[in-house]
Length: 475
Ligand SMILES: Cc1cc2nc3c(=O)[nH]c(=O)nc-3n(C[C@H](O)[C@H](O)[C@H](O)COP(=O)(O)OP(=O)(O)OC[C@H]3O[C@@H](n4cnc5c(N)ncnc54)[C@H](O)[C@@H]3O)c2cc1C
Ligand code: SF4
Image 1 (cartoon, rainbow, N blue to C red):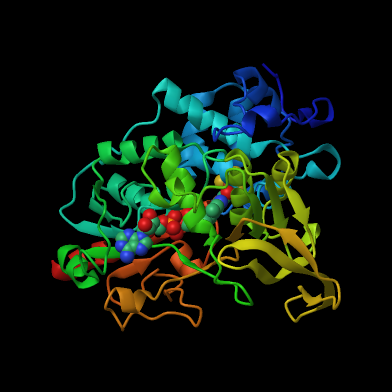
Image 2 (image 1 turned 120 degrees about the vertical axis):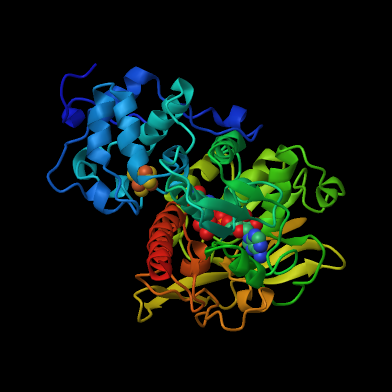
């Protein structure tokens, strides 16, 4: 066991072992191994325990990272778990899929000369160990409250709020149009980043603690928002963003051009053992196909790596900017490159070629122009630079916008921003409808799991205050 911290000068950074490409490309299991206890302690001991921990400042949950690193270094893992769980409902999930290079680890002070502390891997290790040891317990509220809340959406935002409110003793009901709990953590993010049992054990724990799930229940179809407002003392909307941005242009309507989330959801469902007709008939299966993915975010990276695992003949990613400007995590780009994905930087589709089904993409080269007012460089096509990439399956991954919630919920008084996200009061988290709150991607636009957790926790605190106030007024 290390006897002190600040070991970064003597001990080099060691990330958990990554499974060999030839092995991992053949399955959907996570690619990183878990630390052994001694490794986790040694890596945690590299923390410099700085006075102003920038890792904590740049963690959306303000996790007390230096504290749990010190406890992990001392192998006081149960205490480390308690500290970690105090600010994060799902530390083992964030440890796996946060883009740490942009958040905590990217701001670690020793990063400048010595490579950052492997914060995410230690965080994951602490809570996985806590599960193994039986330290993670279902909610045990000190007292039951009669008031109830309705939460629309069982993604990380809704689940974090459910956890917080159940711990306070509220009767918590979560409604989701899907058949499983987890939102994009189940049907978007592939198993090679986050294995499904990791999400399922959280869902089971919440149910054991008294959270009631109403699955296959689409609000706006099976039940109305007005029903839920009448049924519960407060309602939280945490429905995420699901309207895929589309590509136009010649040939955009050909067969074999599919939206990213349809493709990923099918792959995730197959992994979970579901029957998916559009996979069985080959529409959403990349096997033996020449695959082109358009886009450069995390979703695009998940698509290219899923296609590799399905046995695609070739996988090409087209992105209109360069590597340095990729919106996705660079760690995931590197993993994709290792797995044989070909990146075509500064390239955008101009037309899709084929008669009935797509057979190729005509691509035009781009160059980065002058920065716009936000500082981001504009992209402009280089005339006469077109070339063709053969393709049997094109996956569109250009981002997501919110659905028309006021329309879907039959609630025209629900105020949205020009881009369709729900407007909330920044302090009360309340929407324009009294007693109706909102959190996660539906407020921020497509974001991250860690931010959805943060929003869910903040919204839960605001809902608690609102319901307490209502009780006082009624008394
Ligand atoms: C492919 C992909 C990969 C990603 N990878 C990462 C990553 O590596 N790291 C990371 O941090 N983030 C990642 N993200 C982003 C992350 O998944 C989201 O930011 C996060 O899940 C948002 O949480 P949420 O609770 O707001 O919404 P969601 O997770 O989208 O959950 C919303 C839930 O609401 C339900 N719902 C919607 N409408 C209704 C309705 N009318 N009635 C009932 N239920 C409804 C949905 O079924 C869903 O279960 C990824 C996203 C995608 C698409
Ligand atoms: S929650 Fe995410 S940002 Fe915060 S410490 Fe964990 S991995 Fe880093």
